[in-house]
Length: 605
Image (cartoon, rainbow, N blue to C red; front, side, top):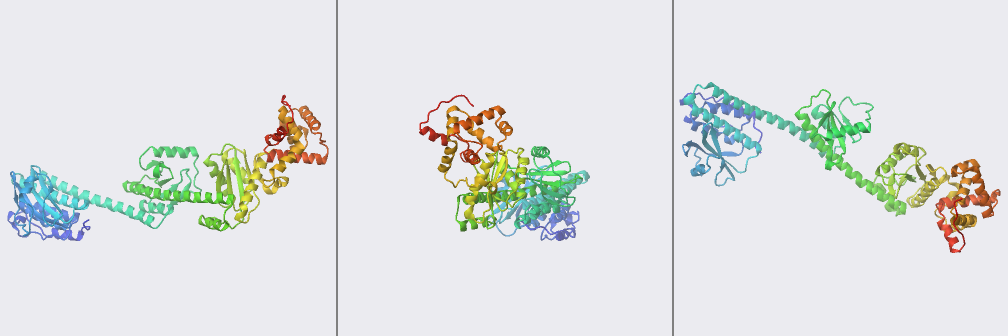
């Protein structure tokens, strides 16, 4: 691209005035202005004045050709005037080197086009046209094709030359036609004005590009983008996430506290902006959505209460939007990689993994595994496959503990935390999910990675005890399980089934044969502390029905429910049957069936 023209050299033309007298024209070669070293729009203006003072078309062409080299790395090879159906070369510009073939001018058929010249890779014949048609050609050559600015400057010079030639041709007939001269001057002024406007616009756009490029090169994040946008526009710039939460603000008048919109209001704003192309004004803000690959990651806005935003402001906002899209997409990809690594880490820790490797992987994702940890298992009804459930659990635990490692297993969310969560976590989740129907199990403390699998089993046991208890919603800590700690997954299931069979076998068999609920009745009776009214309400039966069932239990099991030791063993057996065996008759009743015990099913007791 040609270098930026120097305004200083434009004065050279103005000092080289040429009078309108025919004897002192550029065509005579006397008093002609010396060629300029470079031309800017102001230099073109001064040159055009000189062109319009020439009275001969050949002199105009020679003057224009002498200044072509000032526009860039170009050379004027030849000039031609149209003479009927043929062309004549303009004299006085012979460089002593091979030039264009004169016959080629006729072959162009009055159009612009390439010509053949040795040792020059780009050669072009520019047509000089007036109101009456083609006036001539100027052949320009260069070692490379001009860029957009070069084309513009060459075309502008050819336009001025054509206008000057048209004026020279019409001067004998319309010498006093002031209207036509005024029109040409207006065209010239308009062209130069457009050139100045274009240059100013390109300068402003270049300023935006450079400012945002510096932000990217320095690794600046969201704060750097909003600060650059504020400096470019003079308007406060801000970034929100898709939910309307403020992420970054640059400029004055930041609200404190920042207003929180309802989800309905936020969605309505997003729909309004989505319907339009480009930034959209919503009240006192210009809003642009950041949606790389069609996914809404955030909102970029300018606060413009006086509606002063212009074309430059919109250009800066749109380019800042593109920079922010790259930034947020990069952050999203990093977060996804980190999340995947953290989930792989906790999954391996729950199963058991090499301690040295575990420490190294934890350091890589920024988690201090050398601190005390707790395993927490969360289950909520109706949220087993909902991703928002995992986010809600992570947010609720982050309010009371450091950021946990988190994963999903089946319908449960499992966390490895650095601090023991309290009962407030269940309350926070109940509020977030809109229902309290969920349970949380918390392990004992774990001081090294090799103890995490054991703590995971403890958290599962605490969760199962809570879910099978009378109050199935809430938080249960393994430390508080008491008897249930020795009934954990480390015990022999066959021995536990044998214990249940010993104390409840007859009742289980009876229930299996007659489709009754004597074992469940006994379990609820013990859960209610032997209170008849509470037990009857829990079973949704009449008090007299409960008394009858308890009497049948005494008769079938041949056990005295008033005896302290018998009562304790029966209560433990019902707990094991309900918590460890899940309240299922299958495992225990199978042994009775294998023993061939008779029985027929009757109505439900």
